[in-house]
Length: 139
Image (cartoon, rainbow, N blue to C red; front, top):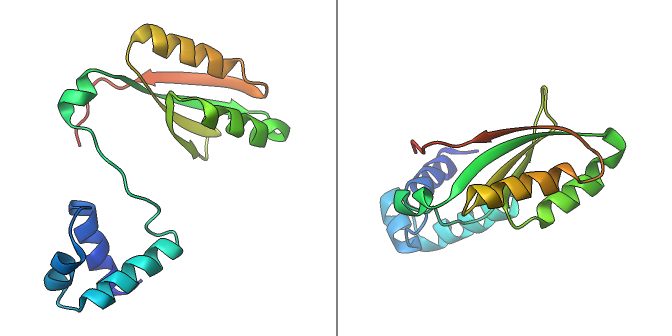
């Protein structure tokens, strides 16, 4: 990845809502160059999407946690599809080490959190889980 792409990604990471015009001015290149570079980074899945980060006030009203998951090797694809259907799961990652998957879970109440964890554990192929509640967000 060249220096221009790295600088562009740094600017977008700091402010994903920057206009192409503002980005081109900050980088000292044309708008067309910035637009083409963004499209290329998206096509290469370096930029894989855009999101909204909720402020700390919104975070206070949610129960957030991570569920570490072990899945039977021959049932992993089916289990992943079922996990991704759960509305409480906001992110799902494959991992190395002790656990196969890491799922971020968000609910409004502890009761909803408990129910979602129970439902996840019933998915065929899930062999073990470990749940951690997030107490505060630092960044």
